[in-house]
Length: 216
Image 1 (spheres, one colour):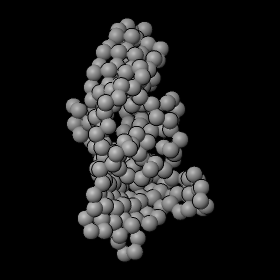
Image 2 (cartoon, rainbow, N blue to C red):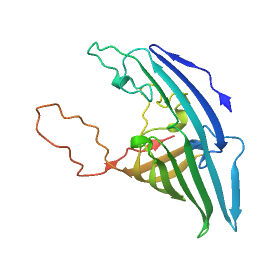
Image 3 (spheres, rainbow, N blue to C red):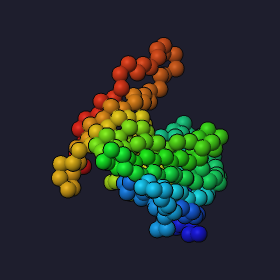
Image 4 (tube, helix red, strand yellow):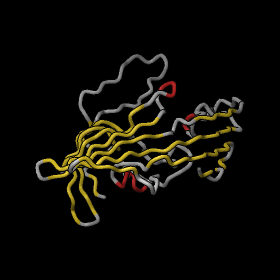
């Protein structure tokens, strides 16, 4: 068990205890919080990796904030309301399974990961995809963000202004050099539009998102 340092944010006290249970499986760009002790076993030419950790969060808001599980500045009320809030939860506890094996001369990679941030602490899917050669299909980080450049934080929220989106997609990634890739993708159209009170209308998703090329 390792107690992480307490984090101070104006109006917020955030502390966490993180217990690595298994290593986080999957590609290196998804395993920033991996344990050094992976649980990996093989069956024939297929390799299986189990991953995850248990994390307890203690959060106290000294000022009003309607997002008690994480520091989300979008939910700070601006109407002058007062109040404090204390929250203890283990919703970030995470489990994953990675499977890798040969298929028609190439490696087929399957990855499934989830945590308990669903409604009512229900288990929810974070990543669920398969990758074969240059093709990736399933749910994972959107192509328009580079998760490898997001610094790890104790708080579940990312640093301000950092995109943090996972969605269904079909992506093709090809290497340009040893240090750069080029990616194209068709992704789910995830609208985040709030219709003002009294305004009639509904949101539509007539077409999926066609992402711009990403060079990384």
